[in-house]
Amino acid sequence: MIVNILAIARLELKLGIRNRWVILSVLILTLFAGILALVGSAPTGTVGVDRLTVTAASLATLSVYLVPLIALLLAFDTVAGEIDRCTLQLVLACPVSRFEILAGKFLGHLAVLSIAVVVGYGVSGAAVAFTSDGGFAGLGVLVRLIATSILLGAVFLAIGYLASALVRQTGTAAALAVGVWLVAVVLYDLGLLAIVVVEREGVFATTLFPWLLVASPGDAFRLFNLAMLGAAKTLTGMAGIAEALPFPPGVALASLIAWLVAAFAAAWFVFRRIEP
Image (cartoon, rainbow, N blue to C red; front, side, top):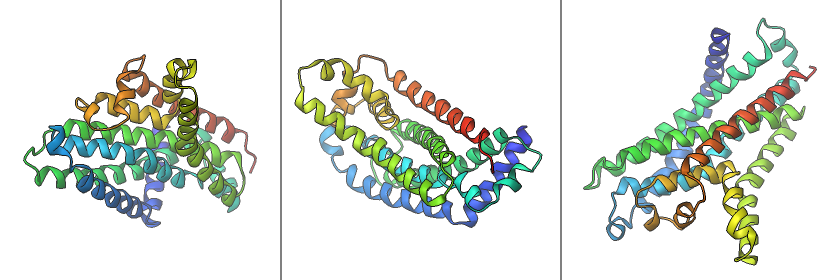
């Protein structure tokens, strides 16, 4: 089974390189990460922490918006595209199980996303480290950010697979992927913020709000990284929320893992029932 999964993953990675997905993803992340690294690390002299840690705090916000979008754009074509191109029957005729097909595609796409995150954030981090007095102080924070960004991308890859398996046209799958990103990353936070502004002293703000934050994969990722920053309070507005959480930062990390397992299991369940 492992051999089949790795063979499919290798094929997906080659397709990603051939379709310029790897190059495009790396360029997007490097461009935005480079801008944030140059601009976001400017307040170092006033907060008293190394530039690499300040840069990592800025990149955490970038990951919340950009990594899920790249993951969903990689994933939307996975099942719906095979159906739309009438190639799913040929794929299912191969001597591999549907789980092996889905897992292989997932590992291939995750490899593409990982290359983009490691190169994009690595180049920006190295540029900041070599041009600042602090050097590589804060390297552990950047490595943790890269690892959790890949985990966040894996969650949205699995969600994208589920969306792709629920429809039969590529165009519909693309629209659904964009809709998922808009609701999960943008509108969800705006909705929570609006309710908190209306009921500042109510049960929602004091009890439900932290749990609804950690229930969102994007917010769970941001809370974990900001809560783990030693100087977080002086770096971001979210730090006050992170410090007031009624649970340890590990719960946010567990939420991401739970999302990954649940979304991939749901995608596999739907994929098993598809008739080409």
